[in-house]
Length: 107
Image 1 (tube, helix red, strand yellow):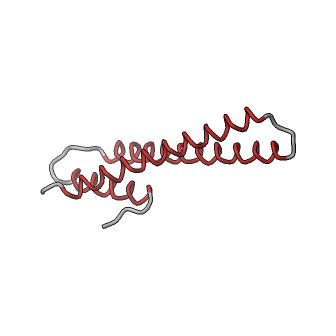
Image 2 (cartoon, helix red, strand yellow; image 1 turned 90 degrees about the horizontal axis):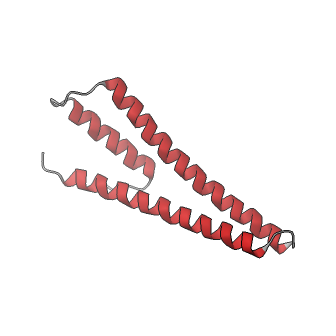
């Protein structure tokens, strides 16, 4: 089973957590649902900030082309967007690797 998006990985994590909760692990459903919602909102906020950083760098690039922005500000914004994107990709890779490790666990 291939994981194509972060939402697939989150859904798989939630399904694995629910299946383990029913097998003798004491867990409160309200705690799990709020923890799942917090994790999902954390990821959503991270992706949203990455998109915002990209948009800001694009806007500053457009302003620089028209001569309205300083080149140093553009370079800083593009660098920030690149670092943010690299962070998002690294987190995605770790989530997918963790999910694949869960799939390989013997039951």
